[in-house]
Length: 450
Image 1 (tube, rainbow, N blue to C red):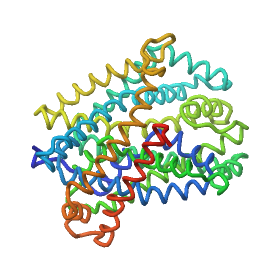
Image 2 (image 1 turned 90 degrees about the vertical axis):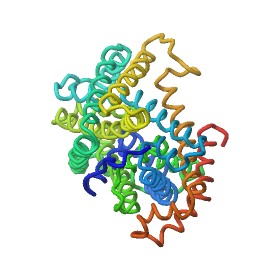
Image 3 (image 1 turned 45 degrees about the vertical axis):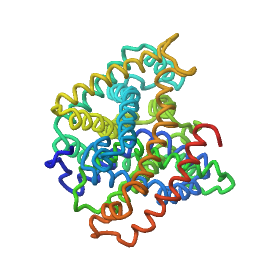
Image 4 (image 1 turned 60 degrees about the vertical axis):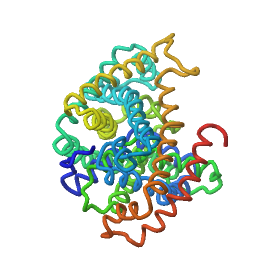
């Protein structure tokens, strides 16, 4: 059962910093800005905000309420709230497995950001062309040892913070890293205002083009909103169990959603003026941050400093998200098997290292570590994103909206009737009818059915 002396976040600012840190990740930097630009700019952003308000934020509220009501890790929360319905316990276990799988390959990619941070500080790629940097990056990835070492460093750093606990580790680091991340992004965005490509970059990101808006655009916005807020892997439910019982969940959820979107937009404001100044076609994903941008930084006056700042903020975004994923596993092991937090962390770290090393090995030339024609890293990315996350998220919504009971859900959402009593009715309506329908559409689209 849940520990009666369970840790909780020490302040409202700490709560927001931790929860926003979990939501803000690599996808905010390399995916959202490009997706917005390619799908109608401000038109996509408006649709994204509407979808976030009507779909993603209610799911976020459901996860927070699940964790705070259950006062345990994601598995324990289901067990505490539905002790005789063991099928729901499996949903909690799925969340633990999903967080573990995602962090195993996420650590490899985050390790790349550490590698480029080191390369920026030492100035190793300054003066190189995009082709030379691309070749260097390919050699690094296919070399095996480099990615393995940097992934190891990243995971050890993450585990070291978790060893310090919820307050002295996760909360304290998030309170330092998240403001620094925002300050660095704002500084980069302000600097980008003075670049020749600023106007073109702003047009790409912010000019509304409704001709590009289709049904697929809405589904893309839904998917981005869902995944950007770290929903479906048990992270927000686990963190929800640390939210103070007097805290306003509506205030927390809306602040986190706004912060997550603001960081993504700031990233676009910082990145695309650079891209268009140097006449490079905008891209998304690893190619943008590990090939395109480094090649541009190499040509810029003071590019080494800009690059170091950029990859430092990328590292902060990655590790604050990693805290939440590892905490899902650590909390599960320590609470369900009676382990000390230290033992749970080392066991989690060992398992993550094994799978992360397999992901690294799967990217070696002629590797046999493939599933369905994809290397292990890409397979885990696709499988968790397209199957485990949305199914787990849908299950959580159904449980909270239909199984827990309206009275209990309303009590948790309003913090015992203290806050947002007028919002609870519409929220429960959305969770019962609108959100499940939209999530089924998303799942079918991800599986290629729609």
